[in-house]
Image 1 (cartoon, rainbow, N blue to C red):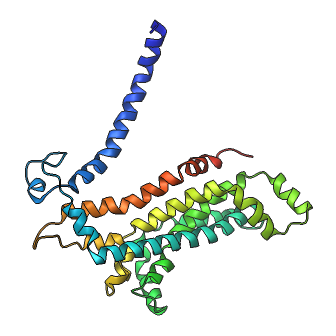
Image 2 (cartoon, helix red, strand yellow):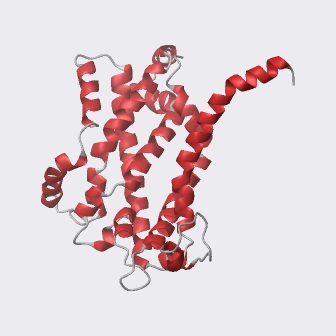
Image 3 (cartoon, one colour):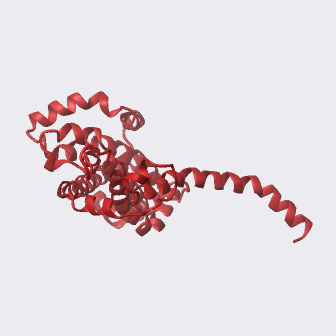
Length: 282
């Protein structure tokens, strides 16, 4: 290697060190959780070590054999998938109006949408609780399908608005000249162009709904059959009586994380396109 090559490598060395530090920092908790999920009771409360001394799969057998956990897994799929679909449907319509149409009060409305994402869940929990009781959906998945879009919809609207703004207006004007209606322009032209953004936003809202605990716990206290995965995991009793179910919770966490990893791997190209699509004007 020439002298200039060595100098270039040395200049990049701090960058590579920072990247390596970030990777280690991000992956260490996941690796530790994965390792813990294969540990026995003696391993857990013995000398601390990264890898289990006697790996076992009994924690996974216990979790997968728990009917309550499997039922909560189905509930999470229904609730997270349904709330993401609702947020994307309503959010894309609102984003089209805020990003493409001209009307009075658009900017204050857009900032009002952004402000809605800043409210903590606990601040509106009591109001939501009374609302779902009045709607007679307390203790059901419908209560969470009603509540989750209150948090995911403003986020979806704000993110999608930037993508709609970045689309070339010439495409829309050409469609109007050809006689297309507003609904046809949105459904046949603009939405297909924003598929990467829809996939990215949909996945992010799905993850938020999938991991949500406070509302799921508050709305399903009296009906365990409607509980989602985070609530079910928090109530694990363990294989042995009076046991601290650390390994079982880690095994459940790995199982719960798997669908998210699969989704990211399947849609990784569209996610990468969606993360950068709104940054360049057409």
